[in-house]
Image 1 (cartoon, rainbow, N blue to C red):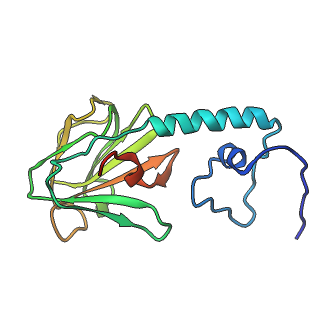
Image 2 (image 1 turned 60 degrees about the vertical axis):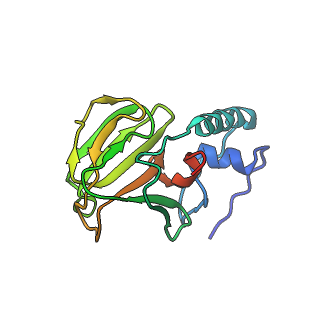
Amino acid sequence: MSTIAVKCKINMDQLAYANDLLPPYTIYLNQKLVIPQNGSTAKKHFERSLISKKSASWKWPMDTKLQYQYKRDPSGLNSLEIYGVPGLPVKAVEQGEVVYAGDGIAHFGLLVMIKHPSGYLSTYAHNSRLLVKEGQAVKSGQTIASLGASGETDRPKLYLEARYRGRKVDVKKLFNGH
């Protein structure tokens, strides 16, 4: 095993940004890392990324009186499950473009994925009916589907997951007040 020492003035945040690393910052054996040549440039990009992340403030996707819980995965990231009766409206958490609407992932049943200007992607699974099509622009709060129990689930629910740059992120941090 060889080690390469690199002398440069960057911090871990800059390294994480340059390599699209998100918490918990897992680095794999033989993974190639980009070392930013100019720490100040990497820092500017990282700060801009943080600003866009902080500006994401999602609206609750269903009636706020419904029972819900955050589900933590083994890496410590939360997804959201909201429980109710089939047919209740599911709403977009933020404006964006529908990049997927279908049933191609059996586990999730009828699924909608929306890409948002903030750089995030929201996924809405287990629906009974889809009310949007791929390529369609949606507004924040627009009804996009009906709650259901499609796919692999034991009860009617909305399963909501968030991604940033293709990686799952903690959805709990994107909601204010919930």
